[in-house]
Length: 109
Image (cartoon, rainbow, N blue to C red; front, side, top):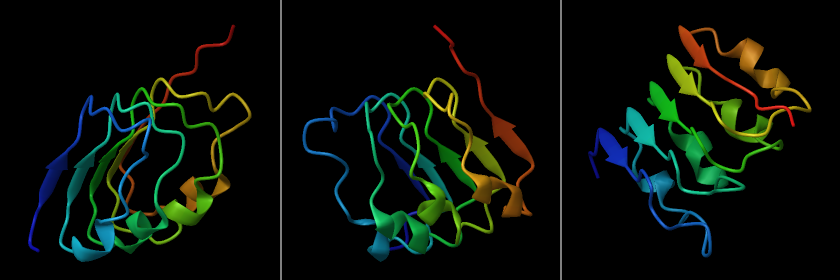
């Protein structure tokens, strides 16, 4: 499949999780998973080596994403606002050399 953009914004995926379909979307350049109440991402997202924009805003991510980011070397914009990364961001982000914009914001209670 030759999709360039996939928007799943506000999808009700939290009960079943995100389907592991991304290994067939290798040309994908933009993925919007904002407001989906996700806790984890399928490992097949790491196969999206052409991905330039990843929006993970307003989910329930807190840790465990290093495996996903390790191969997303084309990533230019990463939006991780409104997630609970109070324990710290994944270390692997520093190796994303194409990254031009990182959007983060933490709410400390």
